[in-house]
Length: 465
Picture 1 (tube, rainbow, N blue to C red):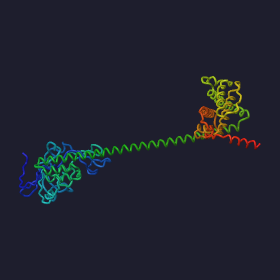
Picture 2: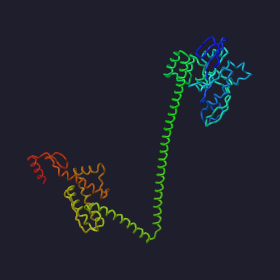
Picture 3: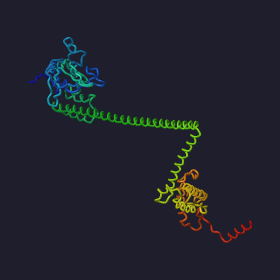
Picture 4: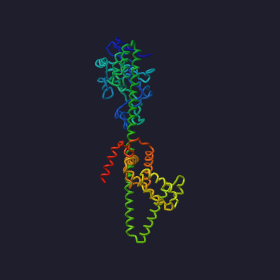
């Protein structure tokens, strides 16, 4: 049978007074299983750089027979004393006695419950004024289980202290109808959250101890939920910060890589320029020291190289100027037969661009390079004459699209493209009817002359003679 107490006044569901005026507090959770948070120097467990040390209490240790028995008959103190309660100091420290240690049931099977009989008047008043949380004083052995993590074993209790804020939290507190608001107002709880008002309303409306215990249980579960949400939020924020830091690190790494590549490219360019300068200097020195025969041989080789390049360029031009389907044969030609059609087309276009232009003579037996030079010269001349006319100058400027008209700087292939484009524009303009009374070259309206104007113009011209 559970031990019964004789009381004469019921102060609340969990508190009552004995005939002597002692305060009896029933079903007080004095300790619990699970993880506890300690400072880095509060236990022998090494923090290993962690801000806190996490110590685990297992069911086997907290509810060990010797551990629970060590609580029975121990002292209740007002705050933790500097030393364990002993025969030498109990008269100064003891404010009451601990009785009936037992394990909770159901949802509370992680709690070690006791009953407290508080005898000191000042301590009784402190409890009535709201000092409700308790904290067990004990000795234990500590074992390191990981970085900043450990486990308590061989727990032996010495006293139970009445405290403002215990390590066990609001769950280890003296129960009472009036204690529910006090319990919920602890710093760990969200005093501004919506669920607080709901819990308070339920606590004040509780009709019996069972309903009050249900409210307290809900409050504890809500606290755990909010703690979990806060932990999850902190973890998410830390992951986001880590992702941002990783991204910035990647960007910095990319910039550093690009900078290194730029440096390497710049260094490579300097090396190649130095090698080129060195090559030139070596070549100059070699030429300065070469004999007449060596000089003649070098110049001959350079001429052959230049001729080969010229020949390659001529072959390319022949392929461009030759009729469709004859490019390969034109490359190997030794006369100008394949250029005859190109020459005739150039003559026809030149007469459109610059009417009255002098046409050179074409000879099929001439070397291809000679005929190519002649055709290129004819195109340059036609464009040069066309540029002094308003109409064709506008066409040339349109094709150049803002670039300078500098025939001397243009190579023959560029001259050919400009010549053909301007010729196409001029042919189109020639085939487009011009309204009567307008000048084709200037685009200005021409005012018809009367017979009197013509007679006047003739008189002035003959009078001048």
